[in-house]
Length: 276
Length: 276
Image 1 (cartoon, rainbow over the protein chains, first blue to last red):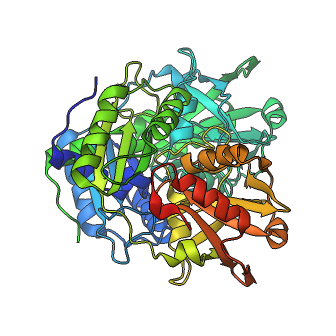
Image 2 (cartoon, one colour):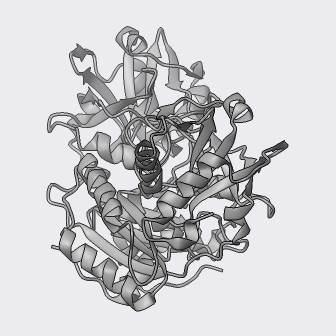
């Protein structure tokens, strides 16, 4: 069955460079107690992305007010912001003066079992490899087809899938960044060729520094995961999840001592349910 | 200025997985004399892409009829077909039974100078590198941000830009595939890690075979271009353009003998203006 859209609806969709070419960016922000605790971190990343893509910047005050208004009326949930380079004629080349389109929407908070924080989550290693793109690495852009394909592999008992690049480097989850802890030091994969530089990833790196932990961005192999004392997943909706299993590998004492300190510290940013 | 959309418009846009995640495919088909000469080649590629992405297939007869109807009423132009995995809740994981969305639209034919066929075109080498993604290489999917960035580099005197991967392999143009001719043999870059496997690329490979030319898919370096007797660009709207210049490199006798034979042969598929 081919769903029927009106001509007007088709032209809104097809005329938008976000749909046509993935020419845009998005943010998904956690709402807690009628507020968006990480709002300005999200806007900072969004604006840095717009600059990297040569897009004009949205009006920050208006966008912040709109997100805060949605948050206040909903109480809890996820505010999604999508910015596209707007309508344009056919052709990849961006218009000289793009008519930026900024859209906001509120979604319900996903149903996260409390045990994901207190006992950890299981991961599977996806067979879908994540691509390498120096031009777009780090950006939360609209082209997420690799993540869609990797997500479709996920078994019901796994909360997240791990994505490796063509060389077997561990990059991130389908929707989370990854951290590992070894001998008290904190490591996360470099994202100069692949992956999304998450808002929570940046917050965790900063928090590690504030806690006087050594934290660095490195190349990560599967062998590094085997050797890790603790493994953590991060994103701005879930906060931090400790990992208890990856395929046949298991970790006991979950969350571990470093994960516990980081979880407590980020929950102080305004989301009590992020605490272990 | 933030353009204002109605709530209904925003929900159509944001609710579509094509916009949200680039979860879809597209085709742009040349219309000539009220017909779409390569219609079934486009539909074959579209359907192969749907299968690779685990998407249900559109109803082929209805889609062909819609494209033919647009072509007949316009006479000349470009029919664009976009297929997305439809609406869905937030989250990368595709719905088990996606409600495929199929959209068609007609655009005017781009204004192509006759000299592009008779005297060749100039290319520039883009600094934006094309990514490597085994999961999506070859597909004409909706995530084309690298091509957008590369296109924005194009100088006014260049008809197309050449995209290299991180290793310096030559992959394709921003919107064209690339062929080179050396000692009478035809070569085109392998697309198992990057690029779009164009409908015209496949037609040119088949046509070369029918003309008893040896044609193969290979790794291509910039040095291979320097050594080439002829270089050609292909896509389903333009047909074949011979290349007369890439940055400081120049080719004389454009189109060359092999390019001329291929151009004549593909124009016999139903687009007279593709002939040299």
